Structure formats: structure tokens, C-alpha cells
Image (cartoon, rainbow, N blue to C red; front, top):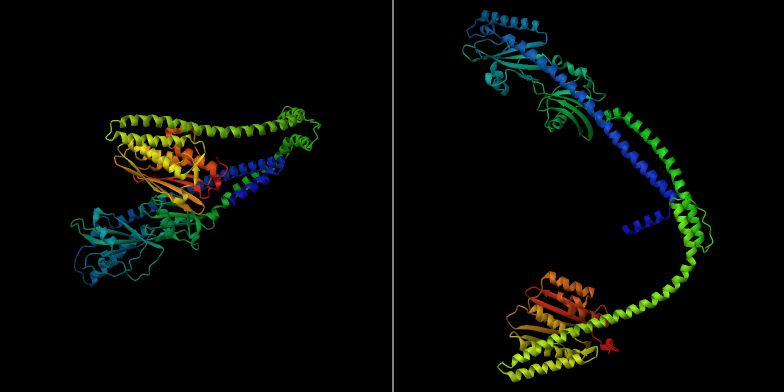
Length: 623
């Protein structure tokens, strides 16, 4: 189906006029080039705008962090001045108080707190959590340290120099009667007795968030942008006043920021199916993240003008490209069209057609060659007819020569084998003079040799299966007299097939290959079984030996030769020429579906199967 579709498209393309092809080609090339350039320019412009906007916003956030650090540091310095010196220690000294002393004590504490608040306008309140159980608590300014001593941050403050001096949080400690105010931050610090080095109290300073983070309210990130401060655990500390009613998702945005592993940067991400543009910084002393968030859809308008300008310029260039492509295609194909018209006249049989196309370009050269061609066409027609008759005759002669060549190769193969065999056999007979029973052995050898030569002298192309079996018995008789290891022939051919004609000398190469290759390294007697099997109209003669067999690579090589019908006499050194020769002779005589097939397993043996037609009628006329 896919190939058919390709052919249909190719056919349609071939039917389109050359002018249209050139025009379409140039149009597509220009369009693709402009598209790629436009996309690259837009992508680069968008990347630069994003980078510049992100860097600018990041610098703003870093300035906010510096402002936060500055205000936090000033508040800590002011807070430190509240309890510095012996004046505060004297205020918290242990002792027993009566009612009047308690009132005086309360007034002294309140006075010191009020005085401190008047001096430091950014501080809303101060609370004292005392570790002295003798000091009365009013649960307004004075509290028991027992209410907060189980907090992790409180224990951390009591470690003194081993920990930080201040702990900042937006979590209310739920002491006293005041309702928690989400607009405040709370700073805790521990006060120690310098002389005894034991904790006197933990102090809490209340600060308005707006005093610390008011710089965030000066930052604007579009219509949907949000700037906020969040702790490392995801809890929100502050967000700019302008974005109070906008969606925040501070925890998800913080997780996306923390996933980068950086303390500051610019990030494009997708949250809840929406693309977000995040700018973040975490370099303040409290390690709180300041994050600016802007939906990518809102930021996109910043690049729309650039995109629209690029589209406008690209469209103009493409329109100019279309005009150029049209006139260029027309100028190129005009002369070719004229040349094509002349060729159409010639194809219609008008050999007198005039070619009036001048010039030295490709069209002019084609016109010149066309003129020369016209003057030769008629002569070529006569020559082609004569050449056709000559070639037909040569093909017939070539076919006859090929058949004669094959027959000559087969005859040369036979005459090459016989002198070899005769020489070896005569040498063996000479050696039998010294055998244990020389007379009997020599008579047996000469009788077998005589039978083989009588069989060789027969000029008929075919022989009966019975005669082929007798021939290979004579062959094995001589072989067994020459060598100590004997080859036993087991004949299991059905009697009804013994008079079936077969191409002469079909069995000997199979037996010879089994002895030379299959039994080459054998030190024991070996067996060759010949079995006949009929499958429908096919007779199969199976020659099975118990030799060493062949490895898969060698088997594959011989099978490929059989499939290729290779019988070149010069390939005898490669092995397998005998059965390849028999294979081709059987195919030539009976048809391509017959011949020889080979099976073998290394260490088990080899089976050569000869496929023949069951009916001997196929051999009529082959003598």
C-alpha cells in the first residue's frame, strides 16, 4: 500500500509541467527558508526579552533582600540595646515581693518597655518570659518562660553562643490575651545572667510586617503578577498589597524553585496546567525566599510586537519571492517548451520539422543535437532493422554454443576423473600381489574395474538405477581393497524403481564425496544407506552416511552452489563439484523442481537427496 502511494505521487509529479515544478520548488524553498529564519529570529528575540526581563526582576528582588537584611539588622541592634547592660539584669534579680513591691515592679517593667518603644517606632511591643518563679507575672508584659520552654526554637536560643542570637517567625505563641495578628513578625532572643551564666528570660519583640517588607509593595509584575516572601517550609510570610486578591499557590511555586537547587535565578515552569515565569532570590539573613511570579500568557504580550513585525516582513519577502519565482520559471522553460513542441512533431513522424532555437545554453545545445539527430534517424531505422536480424541470429548461435560448452565441461570432468582412478586402481592391483590371498583379490579388483569401464564406454545419456547401483558397488569394491577401512553399502531401494532411468554417473560423485569428505579421518568401517521414498509424483533417493558431517558454514556454501547451479570445472578444488554437476544435469533433463538437496550435522553425518519424477515417460527421446 505504501509503495503504491509513492508510485501514485511520483506519477502525478511526472505529469506536472516543468514551469509549474520550478515555480513550486522555488516557492517552497523560499517559504521554508523564511519560516526557519523567522522562527529563529523570533525565538532569539523572545529568549533575549525573557532573559533581560528576568535579570531586571532578579536585581529588584536582590535589592528587596538587601532592604530586608538592613531592616532586620537594625531591629536586632535596637532589640539588643533593650536588654544590654546591668540595668536589665537588676530588673530581673531574684527576690521576694509583697503587693506594693509587685506594683512597683510592674510599673518599672512597663516604663522601660514604653520608653524603648517611644525611641523605636518600628517595634510594636516587647514581652518578657522570665525564668524566675518569684517574679509576679501580669500576662500582659511579663510571662512565665514555662509557656514556651518546650518549643524547639526556645531550647535552641538557650544554647547561648552555640546557636543564633535571634529567632524570627510569623507564628504567634498564643500567650496572653491578645488575638493573633497576621500582619506581625515576632523576634525572640535569650537573656543570660552574666555573673552566674544562667538564663534570666526570653524576650519577644513584635514588629509590623509592613515595616520590614514594604519594599515589596513597590514592585509590580503586570496585571496578574505576584511578589511574595515564603519560608523554606512553604508557609507564606508576606505578599505585596497589590496582589492580595490574586491566586498564589506559594507552596507549589516554592517546590518548583527549590527543585532547581539554586538560591536565585529565573525559571519557566508549568503549574496546574499553566505556564509560569518565576524569578526568585534567597540571599537574605533569614533564608526566606522572595519570589516573583508572572503567568507566561501575560508575559507573552511583550513579544507580540516583535512577532507581528517579523511576520509582516516575512510575508512581504515571500510575496516578492513568489513574483520572482514565477518570472524565473517562465524564462527558464520558454525555450524548453519550444524545443518540446519540435520534438512532438518529430515523434509524430514529421522528420522535416524545423528547429529554430539559437543560443549556447542547454536549450541551444539540445536544439543543435536534435538537428543532427534528425539527419540520422532514417539511416538508423534501416540499420536497426538489419541489426535486429543479426542479433537474433547471434543469440541463437550463442545459445547453441552455451549448450555445447556445458556438455564439453561435463565430458572434461568425466575424462579428468577416469585416468586418476585407473592409475590408483592399477597401483592397488600391483600391491595385491603381496596380499594374503592375491589371486582372489586381484580377480575381484580386475572384475570390478572391468565392470566400471564397460559402464563408462556406454554412450547413452541415461542408465537404469539398477546399473548405477552396480557401478557404485564396483567402485566400493575397489575402494575397500585399497584401504583397510571398509565402506558398507546398504541398498534399500524399492524393486519397482530399479528399472527407472536416471542420468548416467549420478551416484558415483555422491559416494565419492562421502568417502573423501565424510570418512576422511575415520579409523573404523563406515556405512552408506540408499533409501527410496515416493512422495506423490516425486521419487526421492536418499544417500545417508555416518561420517563426520559438515559445519553450518561449509553446508551453507555447498547449498548456495546447488541453488546457483554452479558447475564450472575450475571450481573442483573447492569441493562439491561432483554433486553440483549431477544437480544441473538432473535439472536440465527433468526440470527446475528436481535435482539434489543436502542436509548435514557435524559429528552425525550427511544426507544427499536426489529428487526425480516417478514416471519414466520424462526420459522418452533422451538417448
